[in-house]
Image 1: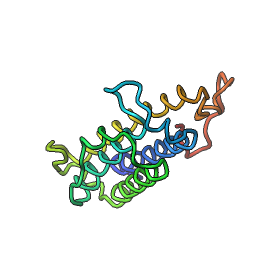
Image 2: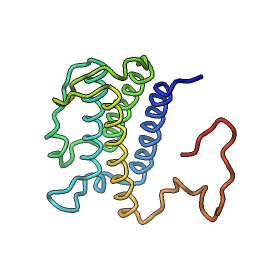
Image 3: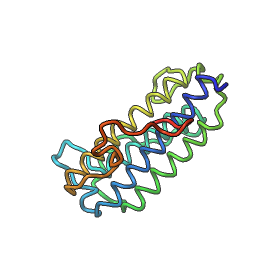
Image 4: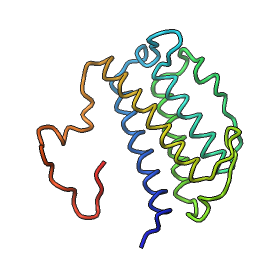
Length: 177
């Protein structure tokens, strides 16, 4: 039987990868100018959000859990007005998330109660992972919303539910999104 701790780690990895793939769909639908477009001076562009997500994942998981050097420049994530192509943004975010998933896949479940100190917060590893997944989901939602607003198109992530009052249950052993 799989432990709750192992299920938590596996689901966290699955959710980060799912959200990352949705961000990729968004980046593919946008040209460079729209990726760096800000609605107002005090708002963030999709490019800023990609940089911010990469920085957050790196600081909390690669540094906080994986022990890598903390190289984050948080203010620069929000100050950027361009300077990276969408391919560079995607590569940076994708590599960071894949490295973080690798750290989580190799993490012994019994270490989830260990205290770490990312970004000057004392948290258990479980709390840190939960923070990252929640934070990633919130900003991914902003990216999805902005992409829909900029393109006027449905992104199709829930197309399989359209018109289905009672969708068929997933195959045995698989969970719903």
